Image 1 (tube, rainbow, N blue to C red):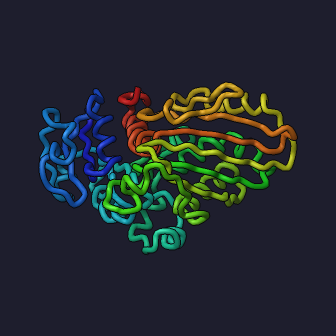
Image 2 (cartoon, rainbow, N blue to C red; image 1 turned 90 degrees about the vertical axis):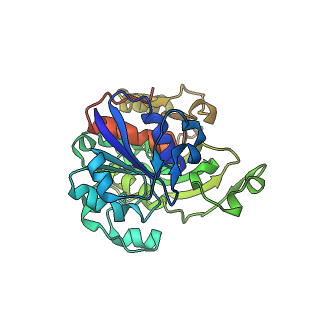
Image 3 (cartoon, rainbow, N blue to C red; image 1 turned 180 degrees about the vertical axis):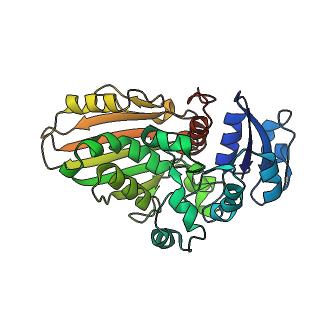
Length: 339
């Protein structure tokens, strides 16, 4: 049994983490704090009334260290790097939901997030928490940089072909669509119901902050510099991500061979489901699960691979993946609390 804290339980990903840990047999939730919210947990999230009698207060480092073995930081970008150092110094294990430890360059972080990174030593030590690729490193890690939601779907979609034959890829275009919870729980006119309902739009075209994360880890997987063309869109749904990825190839490939490659690559991974040929992922089949569904289609000339993938942005794209990482770190079954 481990003692776990959630910092930022007032956000969607923090709430989802608590939902997943609710019945986890190896975990006792011993500390909760909310983002700029004080009061009973049931006042913030009424569904927990009668189950959790916590009172949420502003974050207190000393109390968190005393109460926890492992801490989930479900806080906004630029906040986690202020909280993690003290926890790590106290030998606590940390899983950060934000982008603060995903990149390895302070200059890149400042370029995309607009502030200087204040904890570069721990940025260098952090392990990227994509279990399907970095499980061995996750097991030994003290600090996990939980991947972004868009990068999770993109990297799982592309890792097999990029690792096999990255040199034959001439370009990658990622057309990504996310539910509104991907923007977080905050007051914003552009995210209000009348603005989002019956609407569909692209945003941050070719300048979304997840772009360098995707580029970085595709380059690590393939040992070749990658620069993807990434265009996100806002769907009028609460949750879920669907990505359509266009991979242009310099040589002809065979679809059945590619399908077998993906089957072998993810054979032992419990949360990646490869669709049969001529089938495509759908949001309704992954929402409120930790699965990533992947489909493959090839053009008649064999040089354009279209990969479709679907995840729940709050689960596999955030809190579910964090629990999966916790399970690996703490020697629980990888699927514990997630199936």
